[in-house]
Each structure stands twice: as structure tokens, then as C-alpha cells.
Image (cartoon, rainbow, N blue to C red; front, side, top):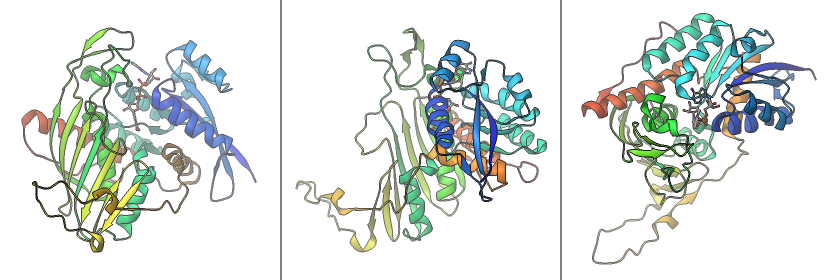
Length: 387
Ligand SMILES: NC(=O)c1ccc[n+]([C@@H]2O[C@H](COP(=O)([O-])OP(=O)(O)OC[C@H]3O[C@@H](n4cnc5c(N)ncnc54)[C@H](O)[C@@H]3O)[C@@H](O)[C@H]2O)c1
């Protein structure tokens, strides 16, 4: 068995996502398991080259994980021909510039979502990558969650009959930062720094809806800043200029209507931090991050509305658990393995920058809908050929 090594420049690894999900749970975990297996039987090990702004933080992080290569000089890392892939998990506002530099250096590029803050930039990025002939990919981790994989299995197996509607509930309380530290970075709450729940979450909802139920054709949304002031990492008060909740209706090809609430200003009375209920003519399902439960037409009870009596039906007990029937890996890691096989063995990878741009399009349309108080249609993006 032969093994080869792929140099991967990783920018933004001192951040929440870059460190835990991409470096530790994906790249280092892949190496610990002996690399990514290719169809030829060959294995690919990843050689991470950590890039960031703080020498001290990089040295500390590299030391903790025995990673020999790190630098604060992105261009130097990109100049090394052994580094064939560039990965970006920086704050959103820093993404386009760095990814463009990587494309210009001839690297294959993989990036967190959203790929850009504006649709124009996202389209330009997709076109630039295509013109350069480099492989490109965007993180779409929710697709690989056990709950959503089970939901996809139900869709593919025809469980629902005709899908009528999807209702999603995402959110939890993010502390303001005064008497308890906030559990998300403060830039998320400043529009001028690339924050906002629409820009953060609508790209996720876009690929979930597109991959499971159909193209998003129109959006009607209301984005709100419920909590106008918060406290940052240094304890200083700042104005929260970005939306912290968004209430959206998404119209899908084929007539499916999806409604998704996204909120950092709600308290959880659910089984998981995100849950989707799908109702179809033949059955319904409720999927979270890990679990998925179904109720078939044949087992659907017949509740009768009577507010004079207490509820007698144990509604939650009338659903059936969908079994795992498979081992589920960390979703970020699964997608990394796919991207490595895409780069090293030419396997297909549908989650490209064009898909990333469609996610940004939905975010931008959602914000426009909210600002102008109207329904906004999404026209298919012309990438000038296959993107
Ligand atoms: N896929 C997901 O589920 C998911 C979840 C959360 C965030 N994200 C995305 O991942 C990216 C990073 O989010 P995060 O929550 O890890 O953020 P974070 O603030 O924890 O990390 C940001 C990283 O970017 C670096 N950085 C570069 N330029 C910077 C600048 N000018 N100001 C501040 N930091 C700068 C920081 O040093 C740090 O390494 C964002 O684009 C976000 O949308 C994705």
C-alpha cells in the first residue's frame, strides 16, 4: 500500500470552527486513522500548515498537537508547491481576499460558509476558481449529520409521498456577555464585521433544502435585532448592529413550502438545537442533529380539537424512531475525506463554490426581503458554463 502526503494550508485554525471541527476532528483525526483511502488503494495523509495572524497562538497550538509547520505569512505558505490545498475558516469578511490569493497561487480551495459576504463576490469567487481550473468546495456539514442523513434516506425511499411542507426551528440563547460570557464570537453580532444570523444560517438552510427537497425559488423573511447591545471578548459593551433572529418562508420547486426560524435569542424547549418537521401525504418526520422520528399515515391518530378537556393523547409517543443502520462519522470529517478524494482521485464533489454562491444568494435575498418587506424570487445564477 502506498501513501502520499498532501500539504494543506489551514487559515483560521485558532477560531472555533477552524480548530475543533476542521483541525482536530477532521485533519488530525484523518491522519490518526492512516489517511484518506483512495479507490486505487493508495492512502493520502494530510500535512497541515497552520496560518494565522498571531505567532504566539499558532506556536502554542502547533506545539500542543506536534504540528511542525506554521506561519503568519500566507503568501509564503502558498508559494510552497507541496501545499496543494488551501482551507479557509477565518471570519467571513476575510475569506474572499485570502481564497482569491490561494486560487491565484494555483491551489485547490476549500472554505467555510458563507463563501463571501455579497452575492457579487461569491459569484466572482466561483468564476475565478473555475477559470483557474482549481478544485473548489464549501463546507456543508449539516448534510452529514446523522439526523439529516436519516431524513435524506426517508426522502430517497419515498416515505413521505408528496412532500407538503418543512418546518425548521433553530436556535438557543446566546448570552449577551455582561453577567455570563457569550458563547459565540462578538463579530457575529456586528454587521460591519460580517455578522448576522441571516448571513450565517441561510447558507446552511439553502443547501439543506436544495439537497433534500428542491431548488429554493423564493424567500420571504423578517430579520430582527432583538438584543441591541452586547459585551465583547474583552468585556466592552458594543452596539449589536446585525440581525440575531430571522423568520423565513422559503418556496421550493414543486410547491413545497419551508418555514425556518433562526434565533440566537430564544430558549430551547426542543430535543435538539435544530429540528425539522417534514409533512408529506404518506407520512411525517421530525429530524434533529442526531435523531429522526416518523409517523406514517397508517399510524396517524385522529386528534379532536376540544379546549375544554386536558390533552389525553401522548403525542410524542406516537412517533417511531428511525434506526441508525450505519456508523456516522463527524460530518466535517466526512466532507474533508470527500474533498481529498476529489483533489487526489478526481471523485465528484457537488458542494462547490457555485453551491456556495447559491447559499449567499439566499442570504442576500432574505435580507432584501426583510428590508423591503416583500417576497423575493431567486433567479438561477449564470456562472457562464459549468462552475
Ligand atoms: N459550518 C458551520 O457549522 C459553521 C459554524 C460556525 C461558523 N462557521 C463559519 O466559520 C467561520 C469562522 O467562524 P468561527 O465561529 O470559527 O469564528 P472565530 O471568531 O472563532 O474564528 C475566526 C478565525 O478567523 C481569524 N481571523 C482572521 N482575520 C480576522 C479578523 N480580521 N478579525 C477576527 N478574526 C480574524 C481568527 O484569528 C480566528 O482564527 C465563519 O465564516 C463562519 O460563518 C461555520
